[in-house]
Image (cartoon, rainbow, N blue to C red; front, side, top):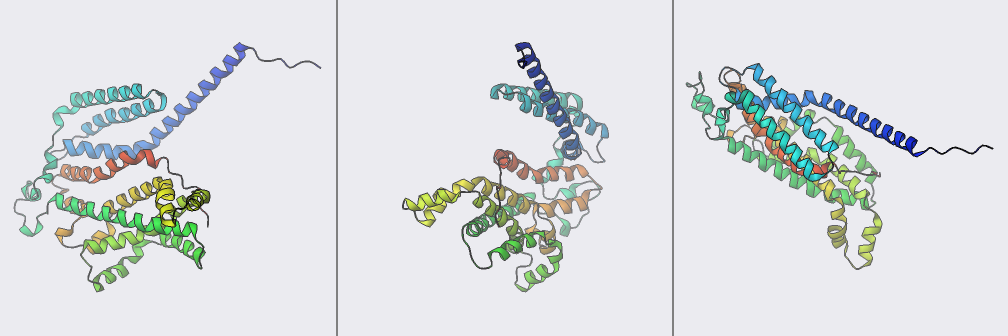
Length: 357
């Protein structure tokens, strides 16, 4: 029987080189695909920011939008390629910084004379609508409140909703994961049904409940509504994270003399901090961007939130100066963007694990 010939070193090197070549090709194709499908999402945000810092009364030149996109899109792609292919942390940082500096220089060279911050007048002038050309005769009743009032209301609403959702969903998720009780399965099924139920169909009943309870046109009423609608999904998600925590860890703490409360706070809760962070981020963004119920339940301008503010700005001055509308939109999305940038390292690690019924 003939002996099987072993490949020599040259053949091994050829196989390794082919494998590396295929891996680079597949990764390049994946990056190209991701860039292609991301462009329809990224371009509107690029254009929104460009309009906010370049549009003047009467409009913005389309060539400015295309020039900025021709610089910003390759910048994002370049930073993505650096993160994908550069392994050393310092080299990655230097390369990304070089790309950003080059992009900034290209922006100032190509469209620098078009850039200005005049559209951000709403940050310090609450009567900016009346100061626009053609609106100087606007009545007092149409004056806008300060954007900082709406921003503070939005932050308060989103922060309070985040705290309530985290508190209730964490305790409820732990109880559903660790205890057996009558009706538990039906309760779990009702959580999914409530989450799938279209909230728009509840607007009229909720409006009547808020009116009868005296909470119509109050931020507290809106807070209770949006928190209630967000809780079913948050509870189900937190239950999945608690299901992924082994019983043995908790039982070991109890066997060592810890109380059930101590085992929960000191042993179990740290194991689900990524889930709590994810639920908190999603709850904050949901509360900050809420529009349907604030539009339905709030009337007084002192109760405006950012979604109402940008709606009325768009309705009032879109035909006069849409650069200001874009600037308000940029200001509106900044908290969500900053929150995601700070928390993305943890969000991408989120793993719900096996959700047991």
